[in-house]
Length: 127
Image 1 (cartoon, one colour):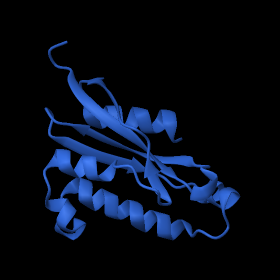
Image 2 (cartoon, rainbow, N blue to C red):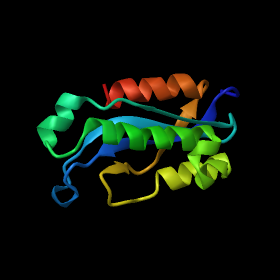
Image 3 (cartoon, one colour):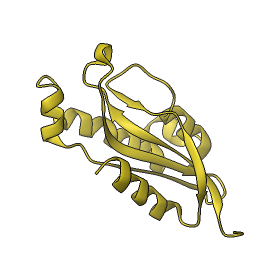
């Protein structure tokens, strides 16, 4: 039990028509303060996106999610937000928004390996 650390995660959703509140899951973002880990994993299924909306390009969603990945990694091209502390970057990314890309409320748990946990949650809720 000593090796287990707390983590928080949120499911990343695409909401093609915000006014209809319909969405589908495309990714997961996970943060573990003790492990100094902030990771994101995503996959946009073009067929699913097309079933929800023919107006939104899959490449556009991928570009936005790539920016989220840059912010998670703290890369200089992640902009000003990419320079924030890990916890602040996580909070900014999972903040409530009314755009096409949104996140669920945050959930918490315990894990040994945040990377493995990120993959497990991704496989369960996205794939």
